[in-house]
Image (cartoon, rainbow, N blue to C red; front, side, top):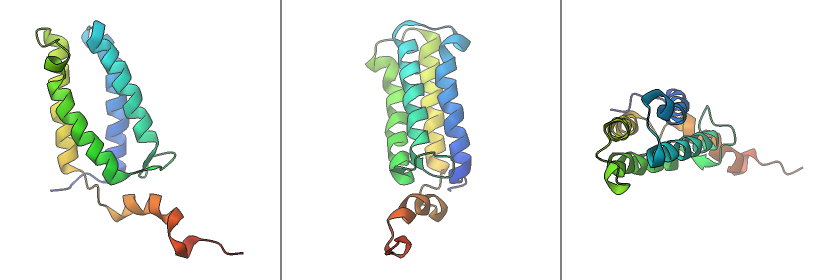
Length: 133
């Protein structure tokens, strides 16, 4: 059931980037979990800005590729507390688990094959849009 449009997904992406950047202050954790949040927030913001969908600025990454990256990130977020050895710290562990599950759910309900999303990037490269003058 793909109920989330590319535009709505864009709003969620910007909110997730902001959440990563604000989480250490909001939930009071530091160290490696804090550093990972800042890195993930910056990367998520960057990927969103260069994705070919209605809220992307540069439209370089096809929206389905964006979706594949998010699926992998969801799994890594859930595993992060154990991969990076902060599974005994409740605040960052719970944050990463909840955000990982949420990103996975967003991935499940997003229409990554929407013609509206995929045509915004590919339109520049279709022969009928080239100028031969």
